[in-house]
Image (cartoon, rainbow, N blue to C red):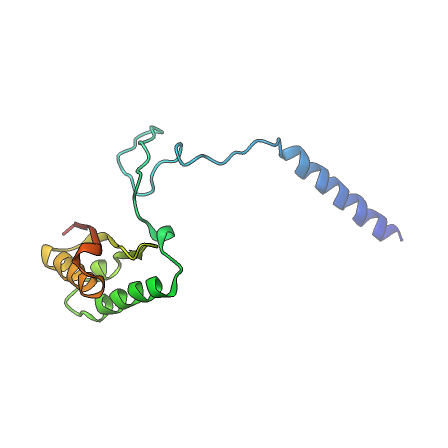
Length: 136
């Protein structure tokens, strides 16, 4: 019985400590306060203005047809032995409108053109947004 009483008292104390640590405020930064990941232009705590309308992986549609589009483009990119590993790691996102956004680094204009052409072959040139950056 003594062991059970101690366990209950310990649990109560830990619960009390947890409540003391919570002041009810929301410590998460809003999207307006957050610096954009990968933005290297900030220095010593200065925050850059948030980027708007940037398509990232979170914008990937969960509709099966959009997942299929992304997978088809990814497969074509991965099967191309002429592309560098850097190019193969490009982000491919198909949004809810069926628009494909390509983001990331490539080693050359040829790699950029190749990936863009592969996406255009799947969805059409008008539905491809090329945000690939040449970084030799």
